[in-house]
Length: 140
Image (cartoon, rainbow, N blue to C red; front, side):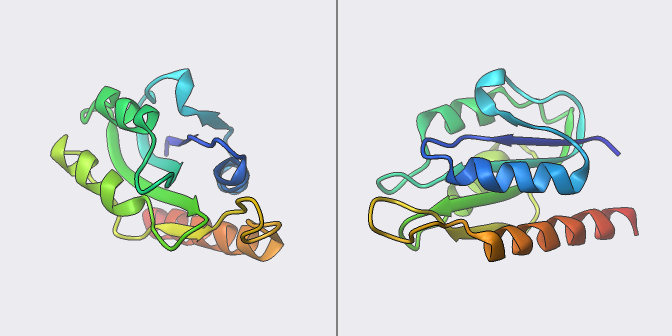
């Protein structure tokens, strides 16, 4: 099974999750600036919400994805506020006819005085458990 982990992270919060997910899946996380993914059975795609939306770089990355190469996308995200990146990313991927898992992972991210040290070790354990569940169901 081909697994890719791609992410966009300004502050490093989403990168922490990406590295954890990639380590659990036995692959290396790559920032989206490295271009669109190769063939992938599962593409874990991470982003954050900034000022009410996902960054334009994430939007451009999604536009580059080839639906013939990506079987399913699993979204993970962070934000300082309660808003998740999942709804916007899902809408954009489905518009391209790319399958999106209903399962997604979200946790708070540190921003100035908010949510200090997040994602923390408990968040990373939860991300690891989430990833193992996705991979187990895919292999079952």
